[in-house]
Image (spheres, rainbow, N blue to C red):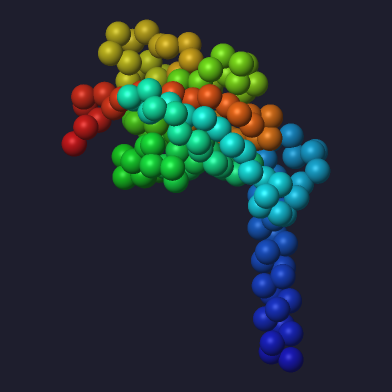
Length: 154
């Protein structure tokens, strides 16, 4: 009896997590699959030396998470994925084709990018990786990870 209740409880938790994950995904009217293989989004990232890396992320995950999992952004440099605590250490440059597929920058994202720019002039391809949510449409996206700014290096 206790085992049946525990299984039922686990099933309910998983079901609610899948429902929550689905609500976080833009275009959630698309068919949602619980299979990881159906949620994979493969990207290409250029490191500061120009070397190309394959990056694998999941639909609904942030670009930051995918880049930290690949080792292109140090996870310790960006501990919080909330824009209120951001210092633009996850700034990336996105190729125009995919930049056009993303929702526009929010006021907060623009403010942080301008604040961190030396000349206070923002690169039009700059985005904060913590604010870019991966979707199936971004398959093949090309991202450049710039070298850290001097004030970001410990």
